[in-house]
Image 1 (cartoon, rainbow, N blue to C red):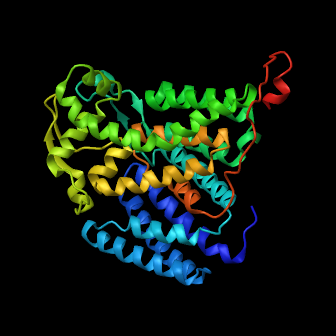
Image 2 (image 1 turned 90 degrees about the horizontal axis):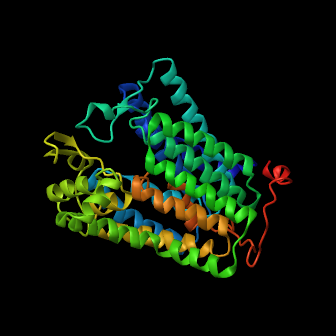
Amino acid sequence: MKVKKREILFYLSYICFFVSLFLGDVYETSIILVVQRLLRIAAYGIIVLQIFGSKLKSKEWIKLLLLLIITLVFGIYTRDLYWSILIIFIYASKNINLENILKLSIIILFSAMICVLCACSVGLLPDVLTARNSSSLDNFVRHSFGFYHSNVLPLIVLYLELYYVLLEKEKAKSSVILVGVGIHVVLFIFCNSRNAFLLAVLFSVLIFGEKYIGTNRKIKKVFYLITKYMVPFLSIFSFSMLFLLLRGGIWDVVDSAFSGRFRLGIYKMRRIGIHLINIMSNEEFKSDYVMHANGTMLDTVVLDNGYLYIILRYGILLILFYFLVSFILSKKAKGNMYVLIVLLSVFAMNFIDNDLVDYLFLPFILIAFNNSQLLEEVDSGNRKRSVKWGISWKKLV
């Protein structure tokens, strides 16, 4: 990974920011909270130095300052500087080599994951047992392995695969995808993260289908249109479920299939309301004290749906930013089936998890506004391949 001198500050700030956000998924301890805060302060300071040394045109400086003023005012009321820092990162990364960003993301994520697993194995971090249904003790069999929840580790492994395919595209090795499938099977046994497992299997099937069979231009166009409008559709559907679920019937079945995510969303919506722009602190958003349908009192309601999280936490207008990101990414990836599959998986993943304002989705935001051609077209249209299992093992590795 070749690094230019003018890019060093950006990579340092990116590492600090990425790791600080990653620590939010680790089981919370006093030491981790201190390290997380120090890393964020370091990231903020370094990225500000980087942006002042970047070669932005006068119009770009004006736009940056206007966006910073808006997001800083928003941050003062919400005590959340994420949007201001995100704006600076977007402008600072416009001419940065995105391949390096993806490689760095893979290195950080893999290394941090191994560190957490090692810390858990020696007892520095607890292996918290979580449940899909807290009303039954038999459900407390889902291991977290040092993370705050059992869903985190399977999703991290899947994101590592997504980064890898996004980086390599048609050069991605089948052996790596197969190893990923094997890991997901093991994680499913211990973590029992059913939605993440099904999504990982679907992702692998689509990649193998493109690699060994191929797709014609009509199918690719369908994938492109689905990818382009998937975020708006999932956002509207997620928001609609908060009202459809009140009718019961089939909507109760849908909610049960997704582990009651939407019912929790109803509790959150009733407490904080619906706003175009929601001005409230993180502490106010996290504290709930509501009665669950099973009779248990909840002091914290976690929204495991990225679209609902943005709508309720920040307001309806903020979800439009992600509409824009999805449109830009889809347009850039229009001719590349591998990237379209990755984007589809990412957008679907945020239907069962909340990564839109977290480290895992950060590279995709930077890619959307970067000037590089990382998502260049791969002409796989009208291509067909027959799979001959007797001689395909060389291609497999």
